[in-house]
Length: 373
Image 1 (spheres, rainbow, N blue to C red):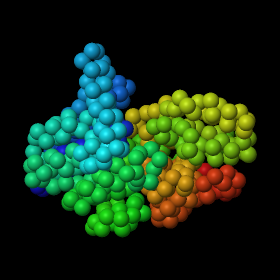
Image 2 (cartoon, helix red, strand yellow):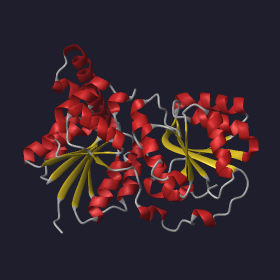
Image 3 (cartoon, one colour):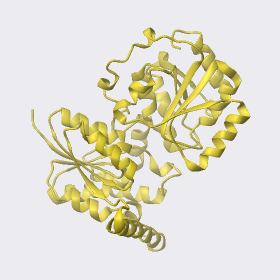
Image 4 (cartoon, rainbow, N blue to C red):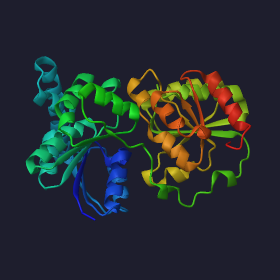
């Protein structure tokens, strides 16, 4: 087998980027030489990165702007401040240079680190990393790849003009583009005239389910346990549907949420739970390698993307693939991305219209009468 030198480039801690982590693991296991370049700017996430590296064979090079000590705080202020200034100037004057530096933190530092060693492939994970990968690929006359994890121009979290600027400047230069759903592939092909992107669904390695008891052999006692997970538990994630349906079922259903509650959502979550007379059980985040095995105590996995958020509606998140591997039945909102998967495995669960908690309840009643639950 031909051994290939590959540099993967992220825009955040790799522990917060499951697709980058899985690609690095897969390529390394296949015998390739893998280097990951990504920034470090949150202390807790930096510790998670270190734990993940203990069991990996690939190399990591981080751009450290953690605000530790006088030097660290100065570096952090300069990098973050430079980005804010570039963003403000871009709003006034426009231009590719200001746009990229206004969108990507530590762009200078990432370009320098990614470009200091040759590779056969430079592959960006996230839009903010694409200018970095493109610069390194150009320097070394290497191939350029891009894993487009989301249609960020359709999300409310990112400035759509800057996202489209980066897509317009670089997608056509990529030797390949990968995406998490066919709907996103079709959208990029239509908007930018590129060749069809490769669809790579968000699925964890099968080895992470090793040792789990098969679903039909699990002992089921008490109420149906609903499970939802994300890095952040916050508003606009569909959790409201889940709380409403638990209120309809009373003690027949439990709601379990895994993740970190965003500070601004704590009071709203308490109020929603109290109004429905529901006790929500919160679970802390777990590392990537332990997530699948943490689910065997639950019955139904919730994938509650909102169809009002076009970017989220078109993608296929980690949730559905994770629930399938963990042996949970799936209750998912009827978005284009999630329908794409459930149409292929209809026996795994059901779809319901976002915001219609009564129809979610109907689906759960049907599941409770089958062997799935």
